[in-house]
Amino acid sequence: MTSIAKRTIAAVAIVAILGLGTPVVALASTSSTTTTTTSSTTTTIATKTPVITTMKQWRAADRLYLAKLKVINLTFLAAAATAKMNLSTSIGSASNATARISARATYRFAITEATIARSNALTLLGEPPLKPGKKPAVTTTTL
Image (cartoon, rainbow, N blue to C red):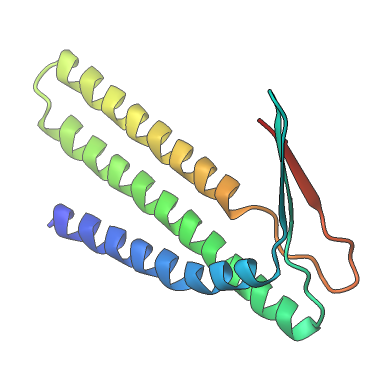
């Protein structure tokens, strides 16, 4: 039963990310500017965030951003709940102290992995969209 629940949660998260991410990629590709400057040792990539000119565009972009944020948070909460459920099952069936220690270590590892995945997803999500009239941020990365 737990593997079916895990698969269902994973499938819903994947569908939501793919379904919500496609319009952002389309929006980003239409108004994004990428400049690459190459020298002998340094590569600088400057990208501008999409410029939003109307409140209607901002509301749509903000709604999409918040939906992605919700998916990230729900995925983290599902992973944490699964880890906690596995911990309680493992501790319940543990017959000695070594098995309990191992179960707790597995739980800590699962929580750490879920936290890292959430952090990476939030980094990829980026900053929320700016309202019209605000100056767009320019991100410069030096490699």
